[in-house]
Length: 482
Image 1: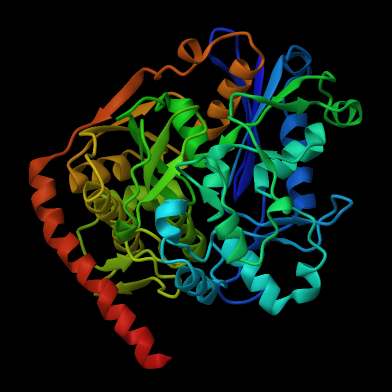
Image 2: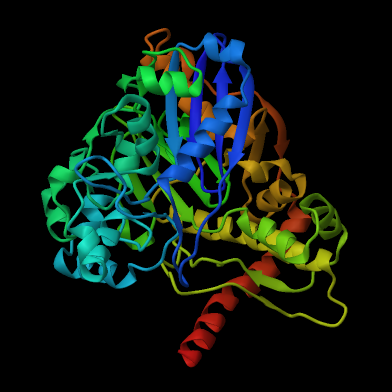
């Protein structure tokens, strides 16, 4: 049996994979995000570790005792900054943090080829611009840095004691030369980063280290277990759903959203703002549209209204189309690359109901995937059928709306809501030496397909046009208030 640990933004999730590839158990422990100022988003390493301990403790002790390996997945881009004693020097700056916008422009100005080297132009949530920001705004903190890790790799450090990452997580830093699959001295130079701070890179199926005895006792796990290098959450989701060969694709509906297609070569297209990254699998890359606001706006609205998500989604499905919503609560990457834009409703009236508001939010999530497909189509072909992972897949209404808007057939499999944790467990299975890649990285059976409906697609097309007009309109409003 194999344990997958996924360090998300809102929770740590675990998955135990049986020897036959079936999921035997899952657990989770919640996480909070701190916003010390507008546009900032942070968490602490200690909060992560507390959640890891809680999630592992929730698993059956007999299952834990039979484990043969551990794999890791996690939120990408976060800046985990450690001193020479491997202690954090400040809270972690997360993937959806917007403070380093000016530093992205500085990097692009210093190296015009930065997008071709790193797979996409620098964006504020990426790790390298954050280091440049720290050198300018927190020089005392910057001077203490001796190691930089990605979020899941800090969990790896606590498990096995080494500073190791994998190509897919390294890919999201703006330090990684995607074609060469190694750190770029030039990108380090333009971002106030010492290349010696960066971790060793190993393929996700390789062993990063073995579980330390003291940590094993703390977690109630067998000591000496091999710990796989793992993958960033997008690539781990691909492994979990079997998207490991050229042309395999899927969508992810978590806090953020992704449209992901595996490729057998490096295919950058910086102008489209599509991420062209190294896969965690040897000899593979991927193209990805990355949206900062996946299914998160659905939970946001439910929390704002104080209503259960399931009830609001049922009301939304029954509601007539009404307002439009722009879902950019924390800015947006694909297709705009705009950290400053914020969300908003348009077309509210006295008869607007909570269900109509939620319907607008669901449509907006679907419309963001229509924009993603348009951007990805400019960089290469998009499969006509896609599997789906993430917590948002639990909503039939959301899945059908995305299918109608995009024209893509969407498939939902068992365990779709635990995709990255499942992928991490699969990487652990291969790293343990028990099975090879071909025997583990299979596609799960699809339990339900969502086929596009032409009539609904025609009605939604008009609303999509309105949605696309809303971004420049609200951008102009924000500029007028600046």
